[in-house]
Amino acid sequence: MKNIVRLIFVIALVAVVLTACAPAPTPVPTAAPPTAAPKPTEAPKPTEVPKPTAVPPTAVPPTAVPPTATVKPTEVVLEKEMVLYSAADQAMVDFAAQAFQTKTGIKVSTVQAGSGVLLARINAEKVRPLGDVLWSVGPDTIGAMPDLFEPYKLKEADKLLPEALDKTNLMAPCSGISSNTIMYNKKLVPAADVPKKWADLLDPKWKGKIVNADPSKSSSSYQSLVTRLLAFKDKGWEFEEKLIQNLVIVPSSSTVYLQVGTGENALGLAFEQGAYIYAAGANATAGVVYPTDGTGVLFDVAALIKGAQHPNAAKAFLDFSVSAEFQKALIEKYYGRRAVRSDVPLPPGVPLAKDIKTIEYDLKWAADNRDANLKKYQDLMVKYNK
Image (cartoon, rainbow, N blue to C red; front, top):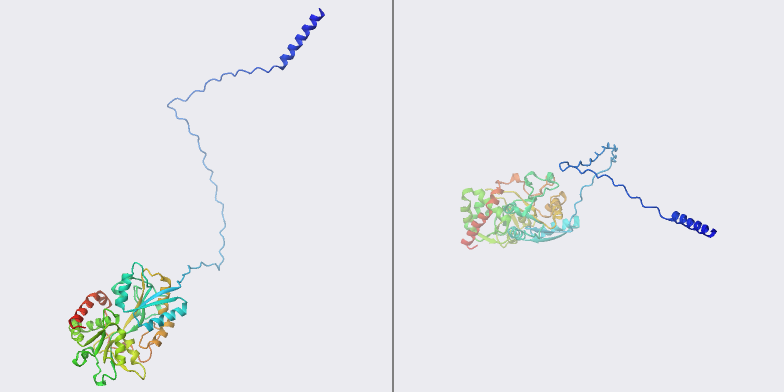
């Protein structure tokens, strides 16, 4: 009996222990009532974006600029070289190139030829220009093809003679000259026979004794032709046809004063400075006449070639060429040249423009009619086998 009681007690105890150690039952969730879906016609309300709060700007005190602070201009960088085209004689071209090179350190290469040849060359090179400046040619040369050049305002334009200035800034003056003198050799022409005017050159005794440059190749010779055409007005070409029969035509203006100065020919139609190479000083072999029936004093010019590869060096050269320093040196070296500045006087012995019988030179007419005038002159050369 006792054993039965004892067995029941053990069974009961094991049951209690097993009940205490068993895991708690998982609760069954209570079903939540379904949320009502919005009706099809209702659009859900958008979430409202809060407006940004305006923040008042913070006052920033200005930074004080020191009174000495300045803005530096953009520095112009000069190229180390440039190419100079010129119709002046080679010695004068070299003189200008060397003076500029000494002043600036910029290396200058030169090409010397007649103005017509150089103009044709610049036109042929216009897609890729090889020259930078065309220097010392007649204004008609630039005016004949102005699109090949670019305007540039000279730094000291206010110091130049008003009559030397080009209002368009396309042409910079180089020096003043009379393109229209009669040069004679003192040994070959007696004093009594020295021509005084253009008309005197028609005398048959001068046939084959007057040398003149081809105006299609020399700007000074073209200016001389235009001067005579303007002087004789509607009889200009009639005069030229008579005159050309007495002439010897040569390719360049330098040949004219060389032949007369050395005695190869008696007379020449020479520009002023070239004539004075042989007409100045006690040992002069030649004399110079300013025709009383009309001549002129003009300025030879320079221009910046459009699309130049060395534009800054080219502009520096143009400014240097009209400087007081160079203009004084130029007229001292080349007697018969006239300075383009109001502060550089004429060399002694060179007559003032007011003391010369001058006619007004029509630059526009000369440029506009250049091709036609040259064609007529070439026709006369062919007709008289010149």
